[in-house]
Image (cartoon, rainbow, N blue to C red; front, side, top):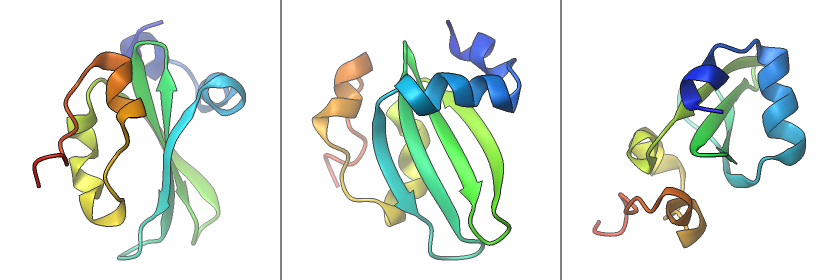
Length: 98
């Protein structure tokens, strides 16, 4: 499965793929603006970001992405990513040189 194929699935289908079987690589809460619980999964040859709105208690999105550069937007909410996430696709950790 590719990220494009995954993105075409319904929320229910995406959840059936990520939640029971895909390894969780990161979990964190945002603390500014709307509170969200973010979980990052490794799914085959890509990653998936699950965004749960804590305030409204609803799933906002499940977004596939290919490189850890996508996670730069969360830099302030998480510690340095461990080697496990970059080892899957051999991308450099964008936080290593900061």
